[in-house]
Amino acid sequence: MSAVSLNTMFTTLNHFVNTVANGDEVIVRGSGFNVLKQPVPHSKSILELRYTNHSGTLLLVAAKIGKVIAFTWQVYMGVAPIAESDWVPLKTTAQSRYTLEGLIPGHYISVRVALISAACTSDFCAPVTILII
Image 1: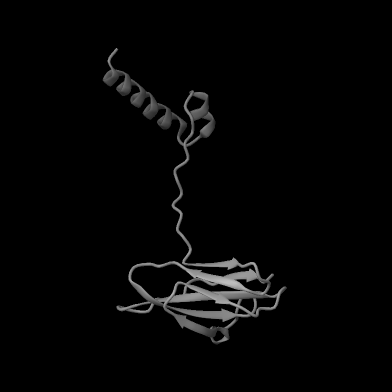
Image 2 (image 1 turned 135 degrees about the horizontal axis):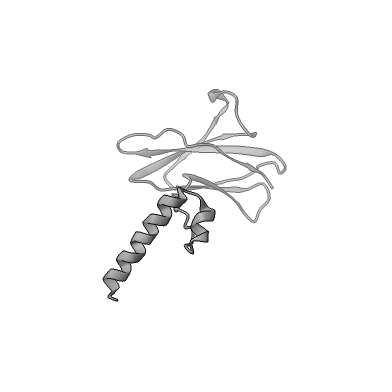
């Protein structure tokens, strides 16, 4: 039997099992085939907060997307601000990393960032909240 006809035979059998099973994994496994899960797309977060070796200090890291020339940082001392006016402007930097010092351990802090390019300024990203240690 040639490789082409063997491939055609298994492809036909695979289509038949998928049609009969209609999404039922038990039928697929019972036929001798393995169930393969489709990969889930993973999108990388724009903002990451990292602990440092010093208590009360966080490293803020923003992703460089496109031709970003600056980053505008905002903070809120707590888990989730109620109003937009609760966000406190922190700093605008040319670097994608910023060290935030002097934080009180045991409290929560929320941070968000907007990316600035020559074309426009993005909306602020979804806030990231972390417990200060």
